[in-house]
Image (tube, rainbow, N blue to C red):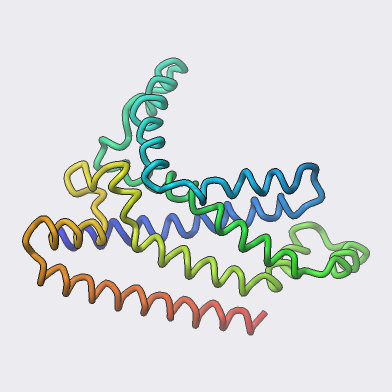
Length: 229
């Protein structure tokens, strides 16, 4: 039962985080790629979370969710945020998602920026002359050209989020109870602390196969989409 709960939490966390991080990083990359002032400075600021230790970021977010956010909510009269979500079995995973997405967005943004550099400016100019709106230019020009970078980001993000460990250790320790215990945390605790070395070793091999299979499936589906575009 504990293993099934860990698998359920891990996949829920990984899928939601992968979707959010790619939406946010692509939106930020499009904004940074536009002709705005202090572009290089903003790029450096957005990349800063990626160079920080996960544990340090985790302790910072733990302070935010435990003390800062509830106190701020009490001052503003927002009752829904006045309690620590990390102490709730139903909402603790949201705090981990917020932290993980915030830190992972930096790396994905850099990859999307690299992809946007490959889009020829004259193609945009021709589309603008033809009367294409911003959304139409993005969907018909930008996204098909940066599709390989989208594939890389999706595969890497899902793989990294499926192996989540440090974020959970820093924020919740797998609690409350086992509500936020991921597969990696379960394998570590069961194998090294619970005396289940053989069982958790088999669990690790199975999980490795699952991650490889999912990554290959993603590559096949997304690369097929690239060809269709």
